[in-house]
Amino acid sequence: MVEQVVGPGVYCVYSTGPSSNSYILAGKKIALIDSGLKENTPNLLNSLKGLGLEPGQVSAVFHTHGHCDHFGGDSLFPDAEVWMHVHDGSLVNARDQDFSAGRYFQGAFFPHVNRYYVESEPLPLRPFNLRLLFSPGHTQGSVCFFEPEKRLLFSGDTLFADAVGRWDLPSGSLVDLQASLRKIRALDFDALLPGHGPLRREPRERQKQAIDERLAELG
Ligand SMILES: [Zn+2]
Image (cartoon, rainbow, N blue to C red; front, top):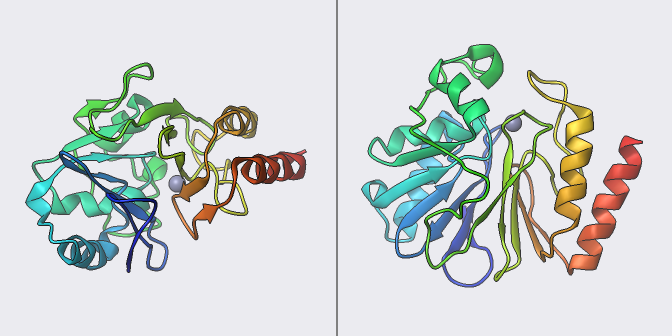
């Protein structure tokens, strides 16, 4: 199932089973934020075709982190740039099964990460103004993407509609996760677009309240 998120050009491919959500950004170029589990590939392909897009048109996949339920769909895009934080990306390139949860999702596809993020540099995806936010905690190399003009936050597995991501997996850290949530709380967004589960569309003050509730639960 694919849904237009906010305005033209931003679409959510909802996850099936344990796969992550995937987001299609159709601007001057076509890019994805995460690509889901390998088993979700037919769903992703159908969603692209439903929008009149071919996999060969996808020029980049921007990953929120290096777990294989977020990158298996990269198998559809052998010529695309594959972006990730250097911490997670170097482990994915080493095919680290423990880090990437590859053992849990058997037969995982591993892409070759060929672009590493630089925090101060905007991502090349006009007309979107995607700003990168390093948000360690779920993994050390987790990132979020903030679009200040459309007031969107793509939060990966750092923050979900009603929960936060796990911090007990390799390189995870509760202290880092709490600090990342406080960074996210300072952003003005009306749509939270997480790595799993439903979107959360509410005014920014309610988004901040929800993060306060999550921080209070973490203690
Ligand atoms: Zn994850």
